[in-house]
Length: 172
Image 1 (cartoon, rainbow, N blue to C red):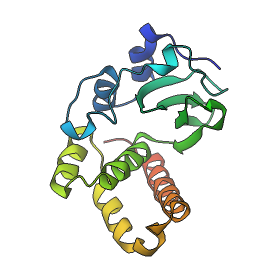
Image 2: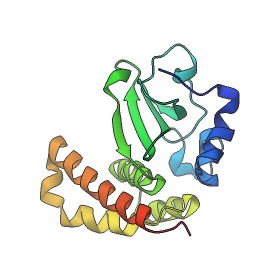
Image 3: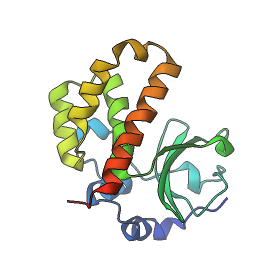
């Protein structure tokens, strides 16, 4: 249950190869209004007595409500996770790549009824390359998305595809 020291957080994110836009958001710079209130650091809970999941040192990105978003490095690569401060031991692995992580965040923004032109602009601001695939996949899977379980399964499948493709392809 270790969290990287707060004063080392940004250097640790850079050391993991996290993109400049993600680091800027984690530092609290709102690079696009779509991210304000949902994807903007600095994190609070992980540094103020909230528990964190057992595992490698966690580098928190930000909090949203009582949910903490972060990344850690395991022997086989990065893991982007989220957890409730009420039950940190029940963390969820949401993606293995930054592109996969963005798929989860853009799905959230879509669910917040952000207009498509705003989604496109926000995606460009962070270098998210899979927004059009995300939108097409949502449309194709429409019937599956009417329950939490169906939506969760669809999103996990999409993120897994994006992670595989991203890991198989060198960064641009």
